View 1 (tube, one colour):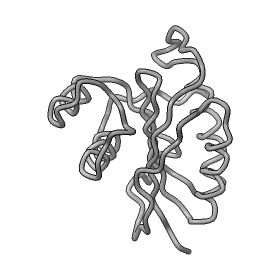
View 2: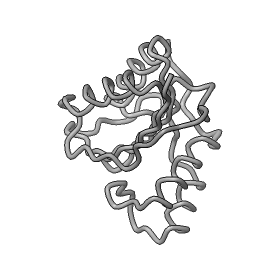
View 3: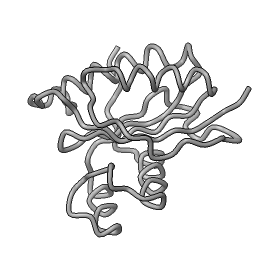
View 4: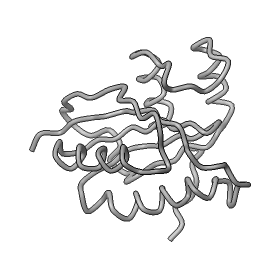
Length: 148
């Protein structure tokens, strides 16, 4: 089985609504669907959303991951979808998360400061910034609680 990892940036096409249980409702729907479907497809990863922009990191079997990415590209909740990382992977690093969702924290503010960023714009991330963002999501304990 050929594993790959893929990170992408996109912009939301929806108008953000007030948070419910700490999560924007459109994003909550994406998370619920991901958490239901990803385990069946052997996919894992993490998502961060802020300022109407997404950064998502995924790991899984090549065919399943590309099928999901094709769906994401065609999803009318996203526009300007851009792959930031697409490469082979030896072993998974998000083993306990079908879809982890990191909340905004002081750690995230520190990430922006460390990379001299005035705002969250993953389309402008270079390789180093992507890797730091992936690590931040992976290590963060500030996550929403999955809703069943």
